[in-house]
Amino acid sequence: MSQFWFLWMPVLTAIGTLLIAWLDRPFFKKWFESEQTGLFEFLHFLLPILTAIIAIRCLFHPYVRKHKFLTFWFAIMAIGGVYLGGEEASWGQHYAGWTTPDFWVGVNDQQETNLHNTTFLLDQYPRALLKVGIVIGALIIPWMLLNRHDKVPRQFDFIYPPLAMAPLAVMVLITEVYNKLQGEVSWGIIKLVRGGEFQETFISWCLIFYACSLLWRLQKIDETDIQ
Image (cartoon, rainbow, N blue to C red; front, side):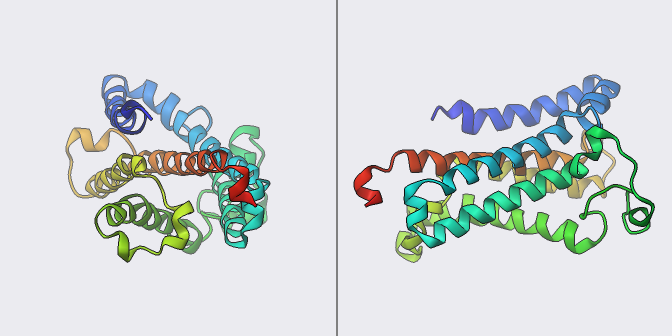
């Protein structure tokens, strides 16, 4: 894979996002941050759903059906992708625009038909779990495979993220710092983009990149490996 796709594309995306927000704030808020018309919201819905679709496709591969752990792994990816995408779009409310039922308004912080705004447990914990998984899977494990390969359980080789995913994982960490700084400093550039939305973009990007990497691996498996 060209370095442009896994290295320079994430970097240019981050720089371009900040540049657009700085040059034209009203345009950015309408076409990037709005829940109805924003590119961020759409990508946070689309990429997890595509991740789920890829995972479902992988579930039907003979090699996956042969291994119970891989079947479980791809099933979790599919369920998680549907959940993340559905929650991000409030299960269609952001696009269809239906009214939140009265009984749900009282338990949802933003009066939307989703679960993650009802409790801290369903909001911050899944996000934290994803971030920890990305750091361990896309940064620590690839480093260990290169430098301490004897310390890594090799029976899970198939599901380890590729080293090419590391730049995206670094962007998740950078946006984490960006998000934390928003509550601490008043620098103009730190206030340009909502930190949480910025980070979710790279988290979603990591998910689809990882799903594609597993699909590519399956496509390289020949019939002798399946048998």
